Length: 135
Image 1 (cartoon, rainbow, N blue to C red):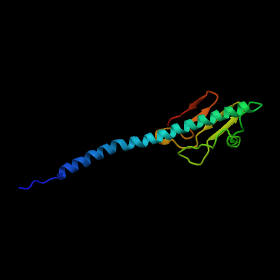
Image 2: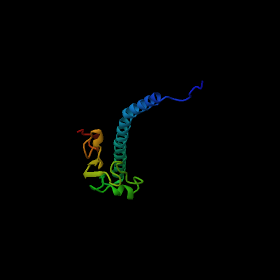
Image 3: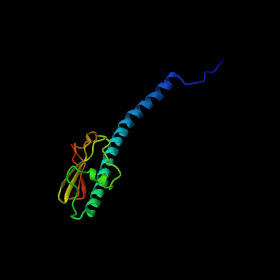
Image 4: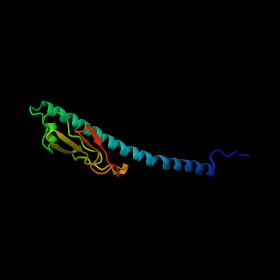
C-alpha cells in the first residue's frame, strides 16, 4: 500500500484560519503605530524649529523672533538645513505665529486617525511644552 505524503485539506484550512486571525489582530495595530509615529515626528520637528527660533533670537540684537508666517528666514539664515513638514500633509510648512517674545508653532497635518484634533500638536515657548487636544 502506498502512503500519501502531504497535508490534508483540513490541515491547510486550519493554517489559513490561524493566519487570517493573526492578520486581523495585528494589521490595525500596525496602522495605528504608523499614525502615532507621524504624530511624534511632528512633535520633534516643532521642537527642532523652536530650537532654531531660540538661536535666531539669541543672535538678534533686539532678541526678537521672526515675524509671523516667516519661518523661511530660518532656512535663509542657515538655522535649519531645510524646512520640515508634517508627514500627513507633505509639502506644507508648519504654522507659525509670533507676538513679540511669544511664539506658537502649529502642525498643519491631520492626526485625527489617532484621536488628535486638527492643528495639533502645538508648541509654544510660553510654557516650553506641547499642547495636545484630543477629540
